Image (cartoon, rainbow, N blue to C red; front, side, top):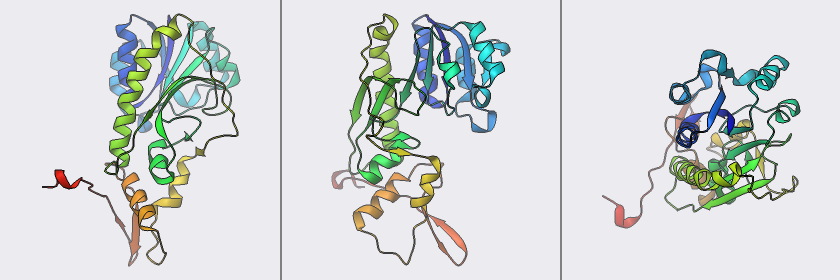
Length: 254
């Protein structure tokens, strides 16, 4: 399988390692610009490609990049936590299509920060492997798996659970994709939820003069507890004060 890999973050590294273990041919890799990369060097080290096979994510859909992708002649595009949209022209290049591993239980939490919104809004948490289309996270579903949210979960602990489940889902589904046996469950683009990165601005500032339900306030604070991210805050005397929660069951309390 000739794979064009688009990735970022730790999950992106682990999925790429798996594909290499499976002896798939990584013909090129798309990465975020340096200031937006997470685990970027690890990705490049695992890929082990020459510089001319490393593609800047921010220009992945520009005509000159699309021409280069045609020359790479991928069978399949695999995207894992890649933050750039593929143009219709690019989506047509791989003969077997493009798939994306999204850290949410689609159709819920399309877009950004699904771990946060599952806690804040109570939407199902999970991970989905799906074909990519022109609209974000709306393509046919190949496989998905839910992840339970415990009362002690924070944005960070839930993300780690989703991350591990995502790797396991990809591993057990890959053979079906490779052999052309993957199922396709169409999504209704009008169902579910969608969030932008900027939506966090609506919840991060805690208004000291506002009235909150205790459950809702706790959910915001724990959802935004994820070092090194700053998270939720309140303002007093012109200064921001950031908050994090430490949640434990009684039997685990020291």
